[in-house]
Length: 199
Image (cartoon, rainbow, N blue to C red; front, side, top):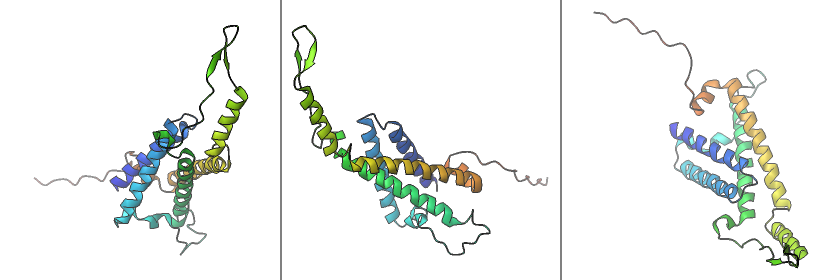
């Protein structure tokens, strides 16, 4: 469970950092690739057969689901984790598809700006400014930054925030000891009295 907790913390830190750097490239892309790497390691770990790392934890089972005790039924927690997993995979997948390795210099480079030229009055102006803007807009569309892929990326990111918020709230309301454990917080409670020793 300690390894699960460390994986959880690493993934959370990388995902939060990627979200906060959404408009700062190439850092946003690098962090996104970091999240992808952690996901790949998690899948490989699950294939190892360890019970705590199994992917069935994301599959909700509705057997025995009744109105009484509904809030604490495992299916609720599993549904929230499944929503997080699907949103995260969508965000990472669309991000990688849009970047195409450019963050590491592997993909096609962005359109370069037109070279500046010296004007008659000593001011800097751009030759063919309209063509430069058209090239940049076409480059963004080509890489999905202004197209449907970008929309899916942003919607999935918003859904990820919603599912994470619901997940955290659910754990704090109904499974506080587990929430404290995953957040590296000390467990509070009554200490068992120490039995007196006979002398």
